Image (cartoon, rainbow, N blue to C red):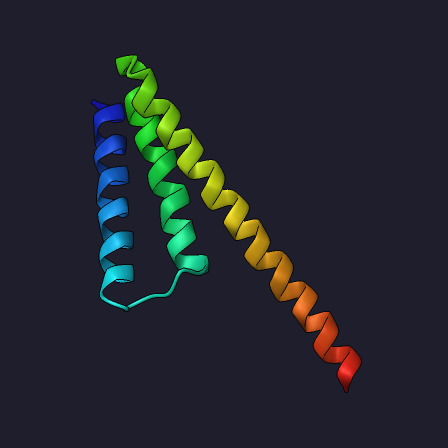
Length: 88
């Protein structure tokens, strides 16, 4: 039951992220990628006990891509702040 609930939460997060992005409520940035990271992770947890390995693998890769995107956003923000301070 726990894994089913976690999986459903992940599915809702994917829909929220996609809906917000598609309606221009958010951009492809930190919030969008965070929603994707949580969604992929939660859905993978929901799929794990079901031995649905193809879907589980997809969700793990989805979460990895989101985590990479978040790291890149954070890096670029810090790198950009350093460049801005050098200009002043």
